[in-house]
Structure formats: C-alpha cells, structure tokens
Amino acid sequence: MIRPLLFLLVLLSITPASAQIGSRLRDLIANRRQSGSGATTQGAKEELSYGSDSMQNLDYWRPTTPGSPLVIYVHGGGWKRGDKGLAAGEKSVHYLQQGYAFASLNYRLVPSCKVEDQASDVAHAVAFLIRRAEQLGFDGKRVVLLGHSAGAHLVALVGTDMSYFKQAEVDPKAVRGIIPLDGAAYDVPKQIAEGGDFMHSTYLEAFGTDPARQDKLSPTKQAAAPNAPAFLILHVQRVDGTAQSIALGEALRKADTPAEVKGFEGHGLQGHAEINRRMGDPTYPATPVVDAWLKKVFAK
Image (cartoon, rainbow, N blue to C red; front, side, top):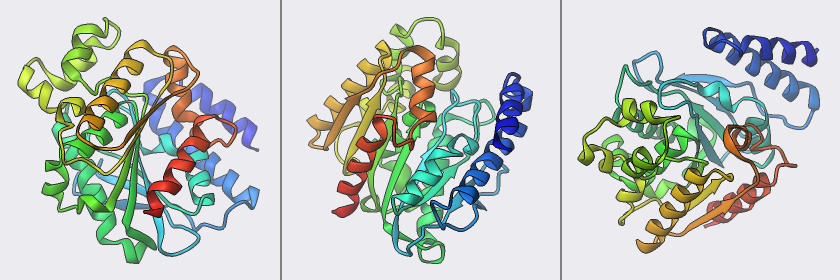
C-alpha cells in the first residue's frame, strides 16, 4: 500500500499548491511505516499549539521511556516555505528508537513575518515544550535542536544569540546542543555578497539590505560567548555551505564553545536535500555521527 502512496506523493509534490496535501501524505506514509514495522512502541503523534498564530504549532512524539531526552527538528524552505511534515518518516522513527522524544516545529514564514520572529518562534516553542516536559514524558533539562537549511540558520541563531532564549524564558543550560544541517547563511552579508544569483533574492527578502541587521542575524557574527553548550555542524560538498560551516565552527571555538564540523558526500541541491531526507536512515553516513554525538551531549 505504501508504494502507490509514494507515487501519488511524487506527483503532488511537483506543484507548490499541493504542499499541504503532500505533507499529509508524508505523515500517512510515516505512520504506516511505524505501525507496520513493529520497531517502536511510541504513541500516536500529537499536534500542539505553542502560540496563537495558525503557524505556531508542532508535532510531538512521546518517548517509549518517560524522562528521555528530546530532539527538536526545525524545517528549511528559504524562510518562506516548508512545514513540520518535512520531518516525517525516518527522523521520528529513528530518534524514538534511539530512546528520545521527538518534535517537529512549524514557524511563521516570510514575508508575513521577519526572520527575527521566526527565531523567536523557535525559542518560544522550546519554552512551551520544556514547561510541559513532565506531562509530555521527556526530560526538560536535556534538549537538542536539529535544523536543516533555513532551519539550520535558525537553530544556529538561537544557539548563539541568547536574547531569544532569554525572551522566551528558556534556561540555556536545558538546551544541550545545536545541530545545523547544511546551512549557508551563518554569515549573512558574506553569503549575500558571494553566494551567487540562485538564492540572492531569497536572502534579500529574508534579511534585507541593512548591514547592521544582517550582522545581527548572522550566527557566525553572534558567536561570542555565551552560546549553547555544544554544536555539531554538518554539511555536504557545496562550496558556500562548506565555507560557511567551517567559519561558524571556527568562530564558536574561538569563543571556547565546543563545535565539531563534519562534511559528507553530496553535491548541489540533490546533496542538500539528501542530508535532510536521509537523516535518521541508519545506512546514511551522517546518521551514526549524529547518534554518537547525541549520546555524548545527553550523558553530561
């Protein structure tokens, strides 16, 4: 039954207007995989609202063991598209099997809001979950943020500019680490100047032309202490993503923040998409690297 659904999902994903239907189908496929495999005993996915806006919601999967750590996923999409359904499938199943709770966030999108509001949404979603940790069955003092593309930028931003966690009343010590996946806007002005034409208009739409604002929204330029306790920065073989990841790691280590930077095979948009799509697949080389790192930071 899954094969026809996958074929239909491919057809629907061709047009942007079908994104919501495609997201629902991805969730259906993921739920069928979970219920049919017998590999995990987690309860059904719960949809929760962390704010009054229709986009301020999240999906949450309870851990099999109460008091387990929590992995939170933040989707990409150029700050103006995408949704929490991009975590469906491998990620929720895999991290539950690893013994964690798992959540995937929606956040408000450009141009209806600013990137600053998106970072605030991420921080407030973290606060919402931590306040309900006992009710939701996870350890509110052991949380990691995992983000891809624009989501990689957002998790890196809230992990370096502590004003977002402060505003949301999040204890920074509760967030054990940050995992950005193949971001390319950790230094916004550099990316706008050197990143070529392909995403240029998207960056300008998200970050504007004010150099001071661009700097404020650049995790690399906000990496002076204090920061989140640890970073695992992953990238594929894209020139800009590689350079930006290395520079962010260097800036964090200069501030005495532990930061590992690791590259994986994959080129262009295909590689960029693959590191997100296959994260959680045990046969994908980045998955065991993340697994080992999570065990390390959650054990502290």
